[in-house]
Amino acid sequence: MINRVKSGIFPNTIKDVIYQVDAWGNYQFTPVLNGWINRPASTDAIAAARDALNGIDPTNGALYYFDQSSTNAWLWSLPIAARMGNMVFCYGK
Image (cartoon, rainbow, N blue to C red; front, side):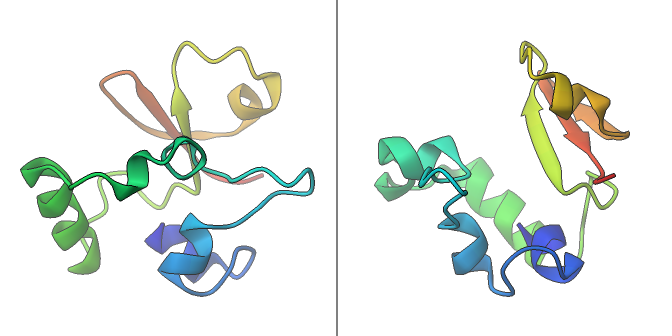
C-alpha cells in the first residue's frame, strides 16, 4: 500500500489505496470486496504493517501482487520484484 501511495499513479493515502475502486466498480483488494478487512488483524499482520510504516519493504518497491496460481497474463507480464510464499510481487511497467 505504501509503495502505491508513493508512486504518484495511485491515490495518495493508504486508506484511499485500500478502498480504491477500478473502472468496473470493483475494489482492488479481495479483503475489501468480501468484508474480511473488518475482521481483527492477526499479530503477524500488525507486525507487517508496523514494519511497512517504519520503512521496511521486503517487496523491493513492488506496486502489484498476486497469488502464483493466477492465470492473469497482464500480471505475469510485469517485472517481478520479489516472491514470498505463494505471493508474487511486481513493479509496474
